[in-house]
Image 1 (cartoon, one colour):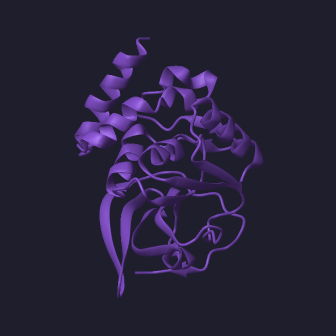
Image 2 (image 1 turned 30 degrees about the vertical axis):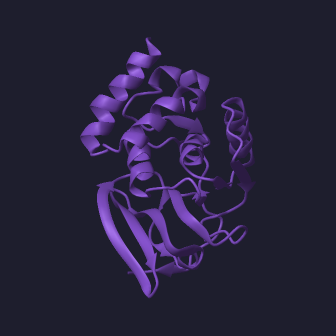
Length: 216
């Protein structure tokens, strides 16, 4: 497989057609090597439009969804990010390339260790991988400029609304199979604005607790 040709095809055939046109975002997809975060047994699927299995019921989000998240949160270089659901570490690496620092929270110890190894091998130094259940929010380091939930929840727990700064954004995948929505919530000086971006169907965020939820 010609890796660079496959990466080019992924961007042109999957990601651009999904309205990811931000030149800086497309450049990050070239710089951060997705194949380095894919399990060795699935390297041949590194650029495919599919959720790649990571083991223990985990999967990577599809490339086009990762790219849309990165574009939609409009991350700036000085901003700090909270990600819930580390998975392979690839989404954290993308966010780290665009922002100041990423705190990413993973509930499974073996997945945390694998992600840390992949991030270190990729030379990513501005990501901290925390072990814990972040499905109800994460107070350590809050408030954040941007929060990304890399798995679906039936509704958004209210804690996240308090853990994002005024002017900050939350990207969340809300709903239950087979229909979920990617939503962007922006905290304003007097409340919150929600924008529905697209419909999708992804695996739910792993959680150890029953959520207290917020409904718009």
